[in-house]
Length: 206
Ligand SMILES: Nc1ncnc2c1ncn2[C@@H]1O[C@H](COP(=O)(O)OP(=O)(O)O)[C@@H](O)[C@H]1O
Ligand SMILES: [Mg+2]
Image (cartoon, rainbow, N blue to C red; front, side, top):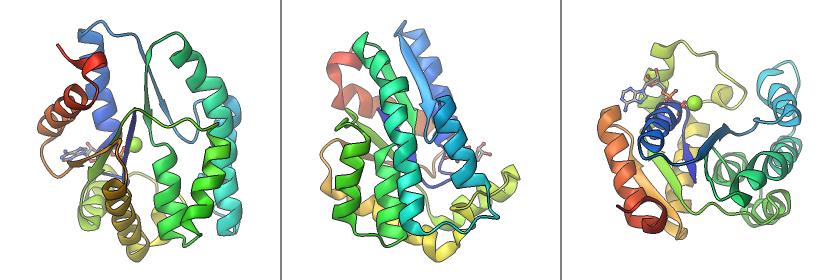
């Protein structure tokens, strides 16, 4: 399954809380982040997110994220799913559709098609989408004093488009649950657990 949402929405926090829960249930699981989690993927991450000296056209940005996804699915995800373990990723295809499609303004249908090629057609069992207002995202990032990457530097209007994109995608997607990310971390965690038990009872039901 995949956690999604704006930066500062609490993805990393919730991945850590979920890891603790999986461990307590003796589930075999792997956590990862996208882009990244393979050598090639981390190299592409460095290029597309940190090399702020480069001017990268939107199409190129899209293809870099998809290049990272193709190796991620092949090398990081598939072996884990093949042995029947749980795979939890911090961001996946929905990020690309929200950021490069809705927010950068690339044709969403085209982005979905290209993404299917890059992801080898793999769709997570469930997307957990953490929703927070853009202002709260900015507040949390300022508090955390995290260095901003290319997309975080794109501005408030851009982030609003990303948020609206996420909301629209969730409305149109069966395997996605919207989670209010403004609540306290423990409460958000409980809502996520509830969603997992409801949506994936075979894996997470009592
Ligand atoms: N539910 C929450 N309420 C308040 N602060 C939070 C919450 N979840 C995360 N934070 C804080 O907000 C910042 C960003 O959280 P993080 O989990 O890194 O988000 P993301 O991975 O989505 O960027 C961190 O400083 C974190 O401690
Ligand atoms: Mg994070």
